Image (cartoon, rainbow, N blue to C red; front, side):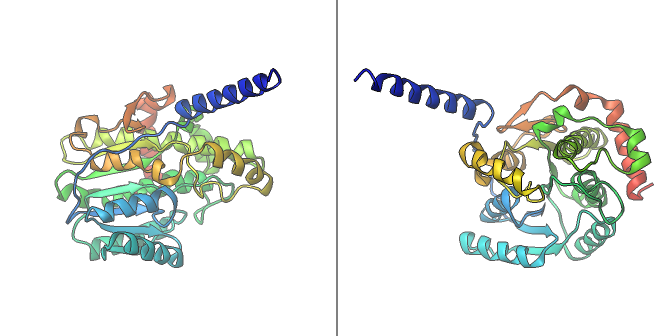
Length: 321
């Protein structure tokens, strides 16, 4: 009996530690809005998998016309079949978009504007952790996570303004707190950090997520006086394909940890859905949400001068100015 007591105490301690970790770093939340989306049109980048697919499914269930903006037609069509089977919706369609190609972003926007009469919600969901370059020579994390979405949003803003109450939601991350924007490096190398080691492209990922938050902050300033609002989101630490480009040994480490602690995509989609559906959020335009609540930003993300400069540099790099 005495031998069992230390073992029982150890199990209690392990359970308490697990509960503490999951309630602090991996907290769950639920979008409670019952709002319908009948007649609304939504674009979701990277909507064929993970958080994006879960978000698409819920918005389709509520009556939205959902545009899956993805690179792979095969994977998008498979996702559409799943969503249609589970929701009964026939209003989920695919349009090709490669955020790593500015030409592809322009082509997508041109096709959308010619074929779709309205846009109510743009969800900049796609993202990656990887090293390499885009087709235009930008660091892939900066190019895909920030610059492609920046250009896409700018090209679609006028259509969003034509409706009533349009919203732009950009998925960022708590990783923005460790990010920085070095404009000299960006203009010299078309990147915010690169290298062959995992910590180097994780730092570049943090930098790109800081860009997402700064972009949203400046976008909100520019949207004042319109009916369009915008929000950045930390979805939580979620089991997705975000890290599919990392090395095998990293996956060996990440996989068991993710299964034990990380949120699943349905849990990870809740804050995005909150910002998409909750009524009365307009006064909070430009803010950063996690667990369905506005949260304080990291210090670097509150610098309005940096946000304005990032916008101006992004215009130049994307060919808008």
